[in-house]
Image (cartoon, rainbow, N blue to C red; front, top):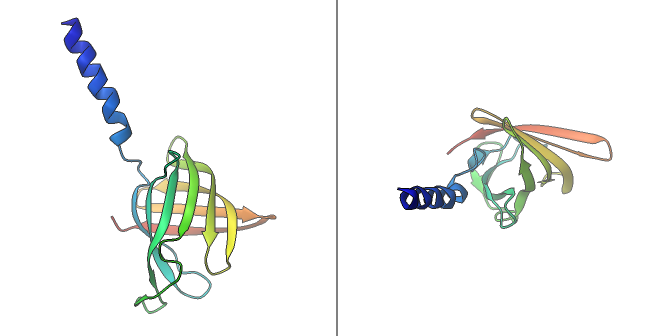
Length: 130
C-alpha cells in the first residue's frame, strides 16, 4: 500500500510541469499607433517565466502583412503571481521601438498588458484567439 502511494505521488509531481499557464496560447494585440496589430504566442520561456513572440502581423484593414518582427520576442520574463497577475516582465512595442518594464493581468479571454518607461505608461487589451 505504501509503495503504491509513493508511486502515485511521484507521477503527480512529474505531471506538474506539464500544466499549462492560463496565459499560454495565441493572443491578438490591440492596434498600435499605426493601426497594425499582431498575433502573439504566449508560452513558458526556458527560464520558467512567461514569454511571447510575434507569429503574424496585420495591417489596419486586417490583411496579413510581411514584417521583420515576425519571430521577435514581444513579452518576456513575466513572473506568474496569484489571481491572473504577472509581474517583473518586459514588453517591446514595435510601433515605438521601445522596451517597457511590464506587467499583465488575465481577465477571462482578455489579457491586459501594460508597461512603463521613465514614467510614461501604456496599456493594451489583448484578445485570446486560442
